Image (tube, rainbow over all chains, first blue to last red; front, side, top):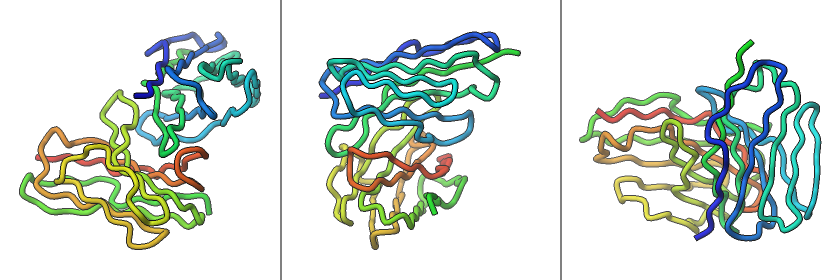
Length: 109
Length: 113
């Protein structure tokens, strides 16, 4: 079945450093979505990428969708303590979302 | 209103109890989902309802029984659970199943004793 792999599993950075998480699918995706889950919270939608090679920015966050629509990345510039949490990519199967294992980001000030 | 509301927020139940989790959304979404999330793991799909009909049951044990009384409500009935069923149960909804942004509720943190 479809699998969505995500690396790294954990990342610790100093405040102000950059952070990147990578997502790879075993199959071509119609779109890819990114969610953030704060400690003790629930997943919150960040963005959806649809087009091959698409790049979208949200303030310090940059999202990319690969040309083959099988991989994606999330890059955070100059991390802040408010960026702490687990970032999940998720790909649709046609019936529901399948989540990657997530990257847990911790930030020390 | 872009909220998905889940009740209760916390639940402790014995293995012989019967309880229900409730979920409500008023965004006009036609797809609703139950996910189970264990600590430090991603959400794992359990059930998908599309237009109030069960469309996906991901081989979930029969001690979990979903119900969709109408397009705004989704229930999960629990009976004879095991301690390993302790987890965060998340309800989500989306415009249509699968392809669009999912809105998650805050979840019910379930402990089975």
